Image (cartoon, rainbow, N blue to C red; front, side, top):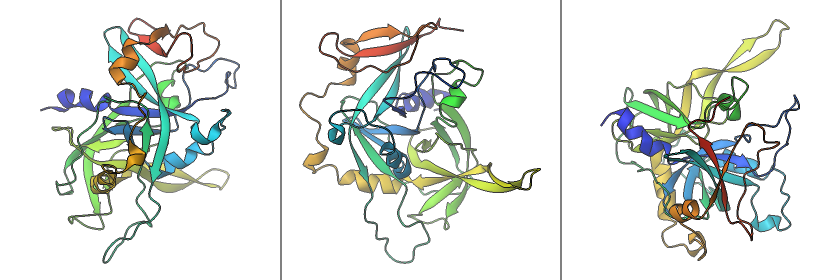
Length: 310
């Protein structure tokens, strides 16, 4: 299959993590056309499990939580972009738990970080479109790869000064290096894809199959000197990824753990959409607010229509 044929299945599994609460007006006094994007994730199990980076998950606790029951209410949504005939639905999935690596004991000689930058977010939904993870194929330099996420977060989607993109950004490259060298269970690998903040947690997949072989977590930076003599770190065209075998090993632990079972009132994605009211996002709105269930009207989903333009 070609990348053009494979990508639609990957794209529908990619989510953006956005805060539930954010300023109603930007620095110019205008309502923001889209919420800030904290990082990227992708669905790895249809029963609500989303993979992302440990460092993305740890930013959740830094967000202001206005809920009266903050202990059980996370201050973020996993925003899924679901394409329908009318356009794109923004589906805010409720976060009900997270999983990060607390203890990591590699066997034998190890050259990697203290622990892999991988974690999982559990959302209250079933029937989600999940990717296929491939931890069997050996990672080799020169293998073509692709990745999709939200580099630069909201800024990339609103670059002209208005919302002009409501999809992840697709990029293609090759595996530039395997860390520490090609082996059965490397601790990481590099790809020649430029990555900025917001793309953390993006899937790295094989273009002709769509199988996910890793996840982006950092970019290789360089130092440049400004005219004032200050040094600033600038991104390069090389980025780092976590191999898929870490994700697979962690996911096996979910199968028999009661803590990862969804509550009985969790709805399927199909049910969420069919029972929701669609709220068009017009240009004259005062503020963008992702709305979830209320007692009277049920779930409201933002609809970006194909005809919507500035």
